Image (tube, rainbow over the protein chains, first blue to last red):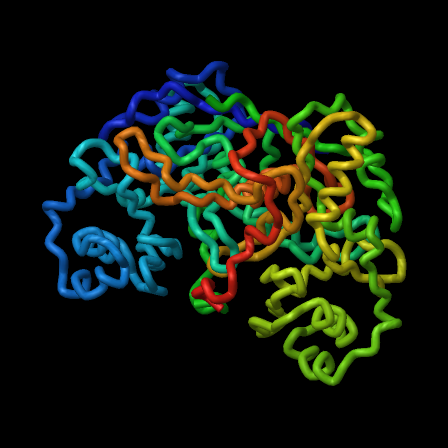
Length: 252
Length: 252
C-alpha cells in the first residue's frame, strides 16, 4: 500500500551558467541528505542553460521560409529561424500559435524555444531544448551517485500545451533511472475485470506534480526532490516512450 | 517561497455504494485531522458510483448507429450505445480507439465510460462520468465544512489520453474551492522579460500528482489528501475552464 509522498522544493540555487555541474549545484543546496529511491525533477530551463543551448538572435540569419512564416507566427523572423532549425515539421500555424514537431519528437509550441529566463543580451538570447534530455538526466543521476553513493532517478520537465485542454502542464522531456510509462495491462480490478486505462504516462504525471512547486519564473523553484514515490515495475525508460508514433496519432 | 507539499493516500474505504456520502466516508478514514487549505483529490470512479451513474447493459437497446459503429469500436453495441448517449460528437473511431466529446466537453476515449471497478452484474454494469463533477466536488467541500468546520478544496480526477503522447494522465473533471487555471500573464522573469508559458493547467497538474498514488484498481487509493499546495491567485474555477473552446482547438 502506498505511503505518503513528499515534494521538497530545492531553493537558493544561483543563476545556472553554461558548463555548471547541476548535480553538484543541487546537492550543495539540499536541506536534507539524499536517500536511495529519491527522484529529482529538474526544470528544462536550467538544463538548457547548463548545456549552453543558447542562441544570440543578432547572430541568426533568417531563411526565406522563416521570413515567410514570421508574420503569421507573430514573431521575430530570427526567432522563427531558430525554431524551424530545431524542428522536423510545422503542424499548425495560426495567429501566433506555432505548433511544431521538435527534433526529438515533442509536439509543442515554438519547439520549446524560450526567450525568458535566459541571461543578458536584452531579450536577444533564447534557449533551445536540450539535445537529449535523457542524457542530461543520466548525467545528473551519475553525479548524485558519484557524490553521495545514492541511487536516484531524475526527470527533466518542461511545460507543454495540449490539444483539447487549456493551459500547459509539466511533461517529462528526459528520464533516467525510472520507467516513463506504467503498464497496468493484465491487472484486474476488485471484481476481476481487466483494467481499461492500462498504460499510464507516469513520468508526465511526475513532471506535472513537480511543476506545482516550480512556477515559471526564476524566483521559482528549478528543482524538486520527490520522496516516497513508488517506482513502477519494468525497465528504465526514455522520453521517447512517451511520444506517440506519428502513424498511431489520430490528431495530426 | 514554496514549502514542502505532502500527498497522503486515504485508504481503507469500503466499496462505495449509490447514495453514499463521500465526505463522511473519507473523514472517517483519515489518519490525521483536516486542516484549512487541504485539497482532496477524489477518483471519478467512486464519485460515479456514489451518484449511481451506472447502466446495466442488458437494459440497453442499441440504436442503429451504435450497431453500425460497434465493429470498428470493437465493443458490445450496447456499450457503444451508452457511450453515444453521453456524447455530443464522435471525433475519431479507428480499430477500437473511440474518441468522443463527452456531454460536458471532455475529449476522451469512450466518453469516460468504464466497465471495470463497477460492482456485480458479471461485467454487465458500466459507469458513466458524473453529470456535473464540479457539483460533486462542491458537495464534498460542503460536507467537510459541515463536519469539521475546515475549508478545503476538492478535485475529481479521471485518466484521459492525450493527442500526441502515449499513456493516460490524471486530469481534473470537477473542481471546487480552487482555481482550475493558474494565470501567470504579466509576470516577469528575473531579467524582466514577460513569461511565455503563462497559463498553467493547474488543476490538471494536481489531478496528475494525485494519480501517482491512486493506481487504477480498487486495491488502489480512491482519495488523496494534499497538504502544502499553494493555491493560485484568482477566483474559484470549474472543469469548464480547462476545456479549449472548439473554435480555438487546432487539432480537431
